[in-house]
Length: 129
Image 1 (cartoon, rainbow, N blue to C red):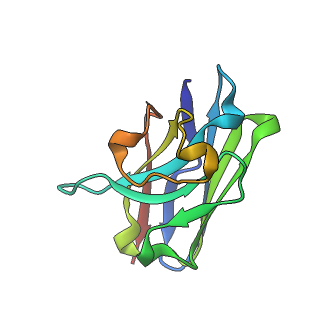
Image 2 (cartoon, rainbow, N blue to C red):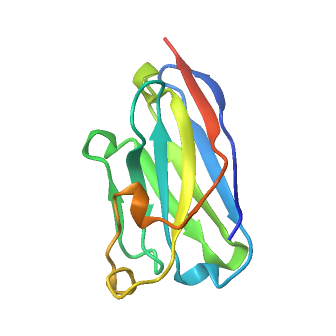
Image 3 (cartoon, rainbow, N blue to C red):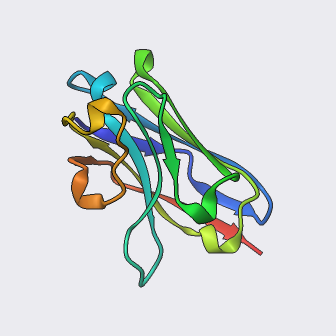
């Protein structure tokens, strides 16, 4: 399931960006989708995830209220809307997809990178102060 991110760039503190991730291949609609980010010298961390049905979403505690994940199964695309950006949000952002499991088909949204099977190439987001 190739994944291709777009929408990264340079933005001033307090600004907004919308990341997109386009997928192709299998039955995309049954995959859990997630966004992760990795800043220089830090581990890859969970940002947000959305269940296959879009009923369940989950966010890193520090990002709740600023970031919103959504998906459009008909277009095989999902999104991360980022508002009120801060310099500490600067990182490479990755989209990821997890194949269906017993847990995920009932709404579970994994948080660990190793629980995802497919990854995009990453897109740089830089927030200036």
